[in-house]
Length: 360
Image (cartoon, rainbow, N blue to C red; front, side, top):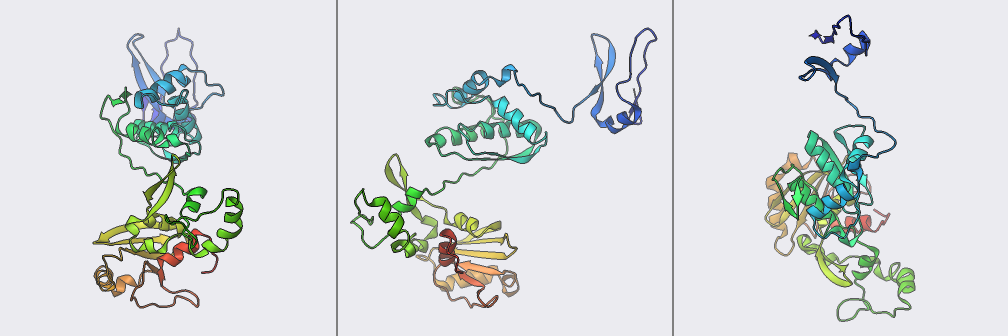
């Protein structure tokens, strides 16, 4: 029976019993105690719900089987998957729960994501207890596009799959994004130098390739050509040649988000007016920043200034510590200190940040 949050037990004289908790202990855990009726024994029991689950050193339960709860689950989500023995979803699930100390919040990092079991397990936990755990998956295998990413997309939509088809529509509110890092080979493949063939690529013998690239091209010739400035005229359609299956595939690159990372921007607001995208945020150094991206093929300086004045009047614009803009402009500039101007060129900042040029 409960009285003011304190539980008392009444016993028959012919039943030997003992106290489980002292009075002060009961008072401290009263919110974890509930009364449950046992219909078979026709008695009431006091049940304590564990606020934290302590895991054993040896995990031998059947649910940790990589076959039953790994391969079968993955094949139901993505039939004919190349992964033969992905780890059990419950192994990952319990590892995450233990690692986060049973918390509903936290960030899980898996730098060998494989088939995406860790992300799947995090989503499953959040679905069960309405948690807000986050996950970061890192993978370099070619199966990312055919297994890892599709698996995450599917388990967001439904928790129950069979033969590649969802068995319910119990989705979970979720937003995830993925990024592809430019490889060393992709960087070389996109150099634009003077001595090129008809395709705009440099020609050199296979034997001299690596020595020439490392000792001369990257240090001397390519200093001003590590990326094509002209392509910044339309930053919304910037493309790089990315190698896929030993072929060059023109791939659209998100320059806007790349630049946000380069300057360490915490984005607060993004809006687009015609062919101008405006990004507001604060850098890690605490500088309030505005970035103006324009398609210079369709937008002139007069239109840019009109939109800027309409969105940011004199008082509003003065709040920014720095303003970035691509292309030539007519904005009045002011020095923020001896070496810095308030209005800065995106192309120049991009080049210095991207290739670690120390001079600012």
